[in-house]
Length: 407
Image 1 (tube, rainbow, N blue to C red):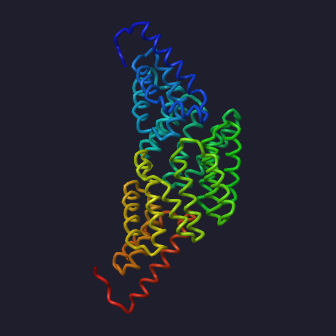
Image 2 (tube, helix red, strand yellow):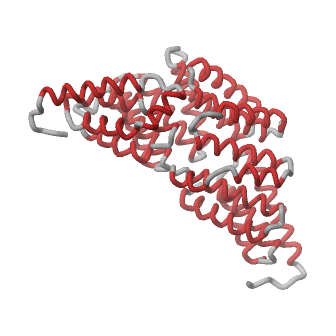
Image 3 (cartoon, rainbow, N blue to C red):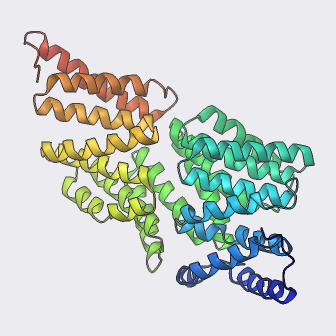
């Protein structure tokens, strides 16, 4: 931040620019997001100018907070993280609600960038600030952020606890319907994880109603996709397809490419579960892996490779299956996503059995089972553990009368 006495006219020009961007980010309808997309470098520059002057810090932070959804929806968090870090570093007072809200948003961006320890630190510090200020709203914001982190790290008991606490706080104040919708969406994921499909669907339907009332099309789409996944995991394929098709219609004419990719992914998984291998492969092929990597959707990229591996396995294309699963495993190791890593290793083991690479298959089976033991509360982990054990025990029985393959 500049220490020299600034020219008053210069400050006024910055303030005028910030007022302009406050107006342009006040509401974020689909058309406005497209408009901002074309001018995001101008927005970025205006924010940097504002942060360099103490007189314009607060106005700049208001723009940052209003533009947060834009950066999150469009996947621009890598370029916004340094900006929020600079805003916090130049804050005139680090014990205000505004500071806490900004810090909480930085935690969310860290989470989106797979920087979970740093995200956790931000949210925990906001909780401490909320306690010091006696500010229940900051407690709510931080609790919602922690809920998302716990979900990503599959710490389900902690997620349930903090989510319940947040809902309890929301009962005291009905002015936070937007936040309530996000919390319901995340609690739906908790219920999905443990296999309570009906409860998960209830939470999502409530969240969709709230998001629709707020005009938040992005999260109407995302919750509709999640609802399809819930139906899919509950084996209700008809309702799952209806939800994915509705999401696809809502996505028409939008620039939400990552959401479109996720919907194709879900549709492909639906076809896979219906044993429609060619249709599944076609759905996965609609997703651009380069775009996923550019927007740092690394786990989604790994899921794409994993799903291609599964399809190629069913189509008896062993080498293509092996190549894709190895790519998925490499990424899941990097991101420490042990649940998905265990799943991919189990599938790769099955490929190795088909290739008569028995020692490699055994090692993959054993590592997969060890990893999946970490998730006793996951309905999906239980399902794939049973499948992997069946394959592993089958391999051991086959080997009882055969010499080991030492390739």
